[in-house]
Amino acid sequence: MSILMSVLRILAHAAILGSLVSGDAVSDLWDQGKASLDAQLAKSTTCTQDNLLVRQEWGDLEPAEKKAYIDAVLCLTTSPSKLDSTQYPGAKTRYDDFVAVHINQTLTIHGTGNFLSWHRYFTWAYENVLRTECGYNGSQPYWDWGRWAADPESSPIFDGSDTSMSGNGEKIEHGSGGFTPAGNGGGCVQTGPFKNMTANLGPITPAITPAPPANPRTDGFGYNPRCLRRDISNYLSSRYTRTEDIVSLIQTSTTIGTFQNTMQAAGIRMGVHAGGHFTIAGDPAGDFFTSPGDPAFWLHHSMIDRTWAIWQMQNLESRLQVIQGPRSMMGGREAATLDDVVNLYVIAEKPYKISELVSIVDGPFCYTYA
Ligand SMILES: *[C@@H]1O[C@H](CO)[C@@H](O)[C@H](O)[C@H]1NC(C)=O
Ligand SMILES: *[C@@H]1O[C@H](CO)[C@@H](O)[C@H](O)[C@H]1NC(C)=O
Ligand SMILES: *[C@@H]1O[C@H](CO)[C@@H](O)[C@H](O)[C@H]1NC(C)=O
Ligand SMILES: [Cu+2]
Image (cartoon, rainbow, N blue to C red; front, side):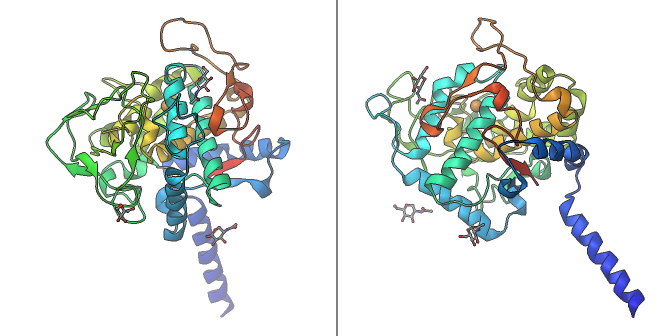
């Protein structure tokens, strides 16, 4: 009897451990850095164990949690914009405000020294607005590319069910924007919670044909309502965003410069950043400027952020207060510094220095990844 009880207890214990350690090679790297993150949390003046939000992979959320997140996003898409409608006539909804902020800064936040910190703050601002303006009490979920790399279309993120981020676009005759052969969709998203979602801003660099209607303004801020189009396929995911690709990115990048450049590579060898964006593809997801207009953007960038955090945690002491790269991707090789300021204007209360945006448990941030 007591032997049986202890065997059962050991099995139960193993099951609990098993559920905490999700077990792929990327989460193993997280686990290896966990003690240093805990030590940093203990030293933090702004973040404690009690208010730490835990970001989870979409596939690990309960149906009710997925619905709560989806409802909050739909709330953003039906709340009014806070931007001036003369300057930004295409910004109709609060959701559009995020797209406008990204369009506005696109050329100084990609291929630059602030790429990672800017998008960390941007993704956090979104999570924060979902919570403060749309009554959401959960966290920003992420898309573990590796977990669904073989077939993203059938993943719980893109399967088109009520608890997904909506499915692929309708299958239409189309061409791709260059990085991939045309995929399985190309038309309007017609399934799931975001089938009625409208993209209002952009496009600026559409990556699909037939091209979406042109924006009435060259800056992309004009009002240009159109359906959300996607062209999901496993072409890139099965080659460039597998678990082994993520592990290799983390393990072979010894400087922040090589890490961010390898991640952002777009061309013959795709990094996970472009790989994820062009796995969704279409409009606005495949548009360099307007990509946050697809609600799956935030799950992708949360994974970008998690991957950066894991890279940092392999040696927190030397990988936190570091920066490399220019301030702009348009010539001008002026180097970014940790004192440069990130300003998100209408979607976040205050600007921060990059040095305040490098730790997930300091500055405005207080979250972790499961
Ligand atoms: C765009 O950037 C300028 C500063 O360059 C700023 O004044 C303006 O508020 C920004 N617009 C948005 C929508 O963030
Ligand atoms: C968050 O909201 C859900 C659904 O409304 C509710 O069941 C849950 O108890 C809430 N959790 C917290 C921590 O408030
Ligand atoms: C889409 O819009 C139509 C018409 O306004 C509405 O009946 C339907 O419920 C909407 N569907 C979703 C998923 O919001
Ligand atoms: Cu971006």
